[in-house]
Length: 213
Image (spheres, rainbow, N blue to C red):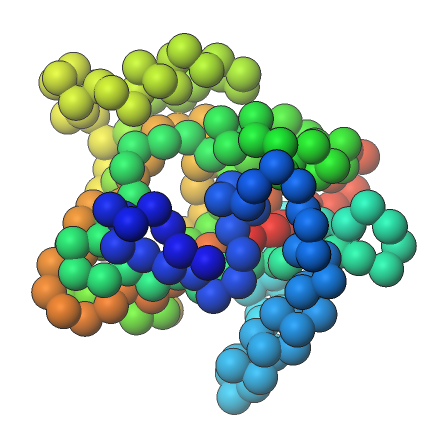
């Protein structure tokens, strides 16, 4: 799957935010995706479960797992790997706005309102590609405020109040990306920026945290 062309990026796995109106065939492809991820990380102790086990330890043992699908035999693709080429970026946005898409209709019946996420740096580019998070919290459901944040490039008070995280290979950051506007700055140089990213939210009963790509 690819980002919009101007973002100069692509995915291994399927980003729920970019799917069309339905999840046609999405769940049928999940077993192959999980198998490929296990093979890709076979030489890493704990494999693909290592991240979610680490997050669970930070969360008093609460389980982190792929969000359950619409029937007992299906589940969501639990992450994506993302590549960004030279000049690649992600514009300012909040992840909560993604939940207004038709592809989230089933998932919203399983999760609490606010989304968050992690980013694991796998392959650091020569420059740029930093995660920039703005010091402005947008309440769940306020679409107009998110739109203002996206086009706030002329609001210097807003645009100058942020933290920029320069991740090294192996670094992981956990962020309230649902409520805080954020972006990825443009990649500099010819080396591809590779990350692993999952969106997450508490289950309705708060007994677990559900993850998806």
